[in-house]
Image (tube, rainbow, N blue to C red; front, side, top):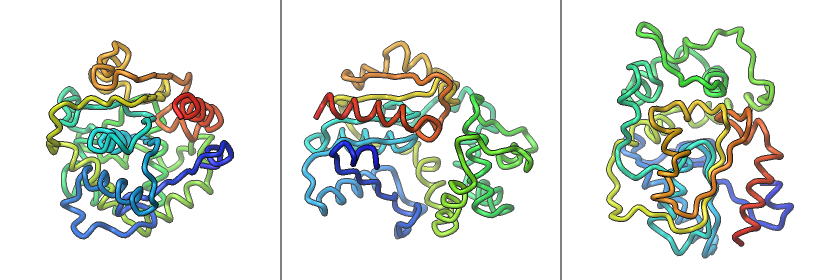
Length: 267
């Protein structure tokens, strides 16, 4: 946000409902991606902003792309990190993975809650950063929960400080994990009716070469083969060597420059 502001842009980073400092949605168990889409548009309308570039990390990607699909006149371009455009239909990649795949576990009501409840929020955040900064897809053993995959003595990634963990953990102490589990994990299988899911605005995807998401069945081929451009024809994909799923925290200066170059090229 500072880099964008210094370059002359207005940068806004809202918390999703039920995340961080935001209030929870009225019925968290019924919240869906499309609710966050409408929230984003409501924020733009409230601030009297007619058109924006959207930047989404991980499941910020489907929200950003859905805004572009549902409200195309409001979007100048989309940049995503760690997750490409995926057609708005129930995903199938999990079908090629074992039962212990973290998404399969977390979409099961109650299971993640019981797993997380054994620890304080800061430890949960710590474990997630350690797990998700590896190049292997997080898959728990048959008699193991996802949180058990991280030994207490495992150090944080060198680019993620204790201060970072304190701040992120304190936010989840306020919000809890209910909405974070509902969206994305328990709502990603819903169907959103968009007859022609083609994003026509300029787009950029930043992927770390060591991002575990590339190990999802079919994911790397979907991106590298250009199949993703069937849906996002004006897409530029950039791979960051040694980058993990948290590439924006690992290499902030490089990612900022990529984003600013993209903004400058299409403003």
